[in-house]
Length: 259
Image (tube, rainbow, N blue to C red; front, side, top):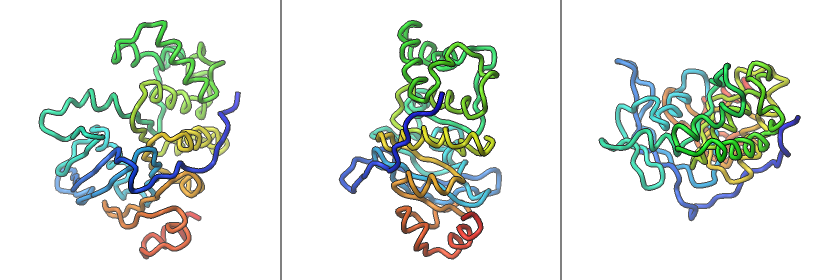
């Protein structure tokens, strides 16, 4: 079964659109090595923001800080009206509002596809098993994999397993979806179905922050593209501006190598 219909084009946002995610003065170091430097960034509701840049520029670290998988050294992160970095913030409750998809699928191999999706619904949300099954089937259908609900993950291709991981995240009804190079571990012929799902989410109004090396996806699906280097956001603008009229010399050099 194929991935869902690919509706190309982001949902338009404007300065009047409420801010879904706010990052203020975010810094992070590993020991004495600084990785992120004083990052300020707003992501508006229904916006797709793509983060691009060379390896080691801090993209994945920034994304992990947003889900508190990495603790920032300084600065604040706001999800709507909730400050995730406040001293007494409920980290588990915050993470339940954010879906994250990694390079690797992190599926439980001994569980069915459906059970991989329902596990968090029953154990975190306290949903009944039958209701969780209905939710799981709906989201598996969304990613084109309802027919594989009873299979073990090992019977699926890498691209299909990544789509299961996306369905698992979506089943929790997150306010924000984070994608950390979700296609980088896939064979090239398996990438397009995963990107089709992500494009469908973008066109449907899901708020997303996406670390990606897929420049075509960033150009077509993003509302804005942020270029990171040396732990900083060096340039952020619309895809047309980033890819056609880049100002930053390091961004121009990066694009000359990847396009």
